[in-house]
Image (cartoon, rainbow, N blue to C red; front, side, top):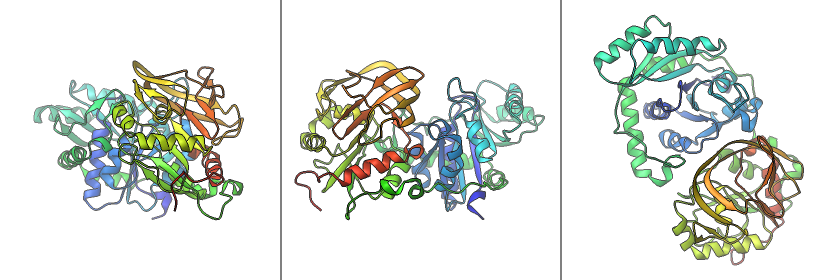
Length: 465
């Protein structure tokens, strides 16, 4: 089997809340338990669902976002992530045809399914309908002839009689029923202000939840039929994405020894794309993860720092209590070493978060609010900095319930150009801090520039290799 013909399915739904994550994660776990190597993927910028996918499969959960990365990169990124897999499962986002606001199908599940030439299995919440399910499925199946809606999984079925009525209705639709799952709250995943609680915060319970989902899927779905459907895909003509090939030669480190870049992780900083670490390594860095909740020191020899998104507001007291690490982060930033901070990282670098002292790198105060800031953004770098050259244009995503006052420094990180025009974030010395989440696979020069800058910096004081 060539890489381009990897068996694959897209798991979609008519709307949010139908049970895509339940079914997709359960299928991933069930097929993995059956001995298949399963590659997990998620449409859109979501960071949390891929954590459950990774737990179910033992492989990194990867995002496929046609807005952030461009349609032309979707198949190459998929082939890179799915290399060596027996089966790839792609969980959709929102409703099947819901994409970037005002941009038609761009970044919708349907759009990604077409780019991957993958059949779609529709997860339908059947809890309040019987014969109407056939009309709903017929509408979705006929809306876009280029989308191959090849099967349905009925979710939240109330009883044997309810299932019988649903299957009778679906007999005339021409779309096969590939599974029926009963209503069951035992495998529920807790949520809070930004969605599901990440795996890193409830790993033991999450393991049990994923195992229960696998059991439910095995009992209610026709795994053989689903696998057979996944194997009907045509070959993709694209070459797999290669992080090394994406980087210009000049973006490698100008030092004989690899610069060490520390990457924040743990329960407070769970938001990251797998391709970021791969790009840093391809650019010549040694990537060293650390946990700001547990580690009192940066990794020995740190010459650069990446702090992604997550939930620092949940852990503000614990992050604040780790004064030795906060001091080291502040010292590293003061030395001019490159520091890239997104969203949660931005808050961690501020003076305080909900009144709790943070690293004090940025002259700003952060606090939680009731207002959700959410959406895609287009932005441009206004000046040269450790992450981006002046004029670099990116597409990003904002997702938070916090505010930072002020929201921008004397030298902002980005000038937002769409859907609104404003400046945002901070550039100071080697620090680049912003609310904007950017997928570096769309602009690999960000990783190359960061590594090159780190190669020229002095290791953190007291840290040697």
